[in-house]
Length: 152
Image 1 (spheres, rainbow, N blue to C red):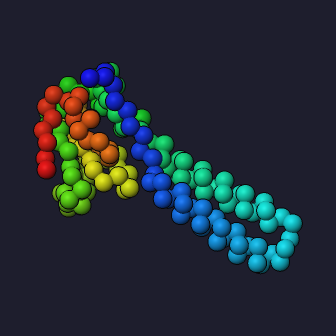
Image 2 (image 1 turned 30 degrees about the vertical axis):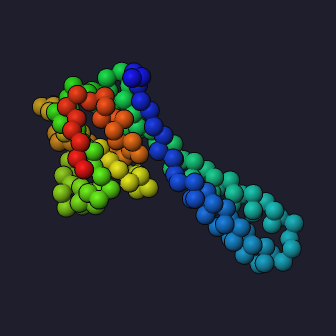
C-alpha cells in the first residue's frame, strides 16, 4: 500500500463541452449584434478564457491522506482524532447534507461528486463534531483510517 493518497476533485468532462457550446452561443449573439465588427474575435477568445478559468478553478480542490492527516483543501485533520469514519453512498447523501447535518460540522462538499466520507472527531479543544468530505473514492481514504467502517 502506498503511504499517501491524493485525489483532485475535477469537474466532469461534459461541463467543458457545455462551456464550449455556451461560449459559441454567447459569442454568436455578440457577433450578430456587432454586425461584423473586427473586435468580435476578441469576444470569443475572452469568453473562452473566462469559461476555462472558471471550470479550472472549480476543479482544483484536492482531498487525501498525507503524513497521518486527512486533507480537504487547505484544512487538515490528524487521523488519531478520528473516532469513527464511514463512506456516505449517493443514496444517503441527500439526507446527510439535509436535516441531519449539524451546523457545527466541517463541510468540504463539491456538488458534482456523488459520494462523501464522514469523519467523526474526538477532540475536546475543537467544537466541530465531524467532517464531511467529498471524494470519488471513499474506500481509498478510509483505508488509511483505522477506525473506519463501511456503510452501504
